Amino acid sequence: MSTDTPSPTDQLLIEHAFRHGFAVTAKMLEVWRSRRLLPGNIAGGGLGRGKGSTSRPAPESFDLVLGLARHGGRGKRPHDVALLLFGDGLPVPEQTVRAAFTAAVTTLTVPGDDEPDTDPEQRLDALADHIADATPTVTLVPARARRVDEGIAHLVRAAGHTWPPAELTALDANPGTSTVTPRDAALAAAAAAINGTMSLEDIGDLFRAMNLTAVANPIASLVETTRKDVPEFADAVLTDDNQLALGPVQDARDHLRDLAATAPFQNLAGAWKTAEEVRQWALDLCGRAEDELAAGQLGEAAVEWMNGRYAMAGLAVLSTLKERDRSPVRHALDALVLLYQVGEYRRLDRLVPGCQWHLLAAEGLMPPPTRELLQDFISRSAPGAGAGVGVGPAS
Image (cartoon, rainbow, N blue to C red; front, side):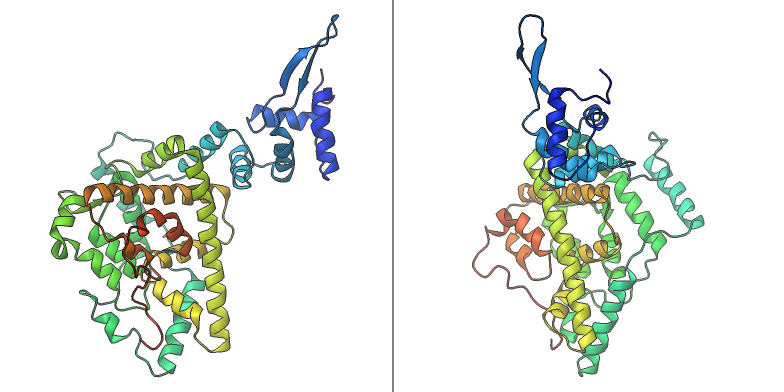
């Protein structure tokens, strides 16, 4: 039968789409099935007397056809379409979704990936040379975030307050301005991907480099002084050469691929939803902070912005502002990284019993949607969780 002539069963799907304002053809149905975005029809019983057999659309096909008509236009990549359907909560086949998440990880490339057997140290030496000769591509602080930082600092000082406040500076064992360059950040990120580890010094440096208006950064200081402040904890979580292992000591992308293939499907869905909520929270916070600056008054948004800029919440804001329009691939990677982080907390919980998980609820430490994802840890805490030490204009 010509693919231009629909079967009676496919005609049901075509008419269903038409009733909802979409033009779908038999050829489109065939292409979607070939890409495993749409299940085949379900065979039924024979009609008898040589008249052939019956079939019917799979029940989920009706909703999927509408989603495919919305997202599956000409030129759309099948993996992107699968992720968009998944994000809409549509019943796209699980293996198709997992394949799309895995394909997202393959977009994380590092020069030298075509020679995987090369010694990691040699790869990093070659990569350092490559980055030194290339134009930096890492944006540490997007211009929009920089403007908010500078605007808040200006209004705080105009109100007669010291910025950063002395109380904050006193909490930093290594106060000062970061000297990390975009090239340094690019090399550190590549090393973390290849080895699955990062030194505490590099982590602290990156925290400082992402908050250049602050000459003091207590969170960076806590990271940098881990070995001295909590040696028993450091012995449990650091490698012999003082590196923090980001999961198994291997290429971090292998771990992300493993998550794409094996994480419970409902966890993938939950992480996708949380990643979207984090993005919306970050954009909303930035918009509210800008409104306060335009009015010349610092309010709740400015305080929330300042609290978060020293910790993971601020990193989420920076990551969001770097991408005006987030692709489905980027969204999938954000979801996998969230699952990665949750897995690391679980690993840490096994290595170091009695961790003070209630600190995850401190204001500004985590984006609020991420805190929700970690409630099973935070809920173990004593009363008072979430109080946190805030940083406000009058601190």
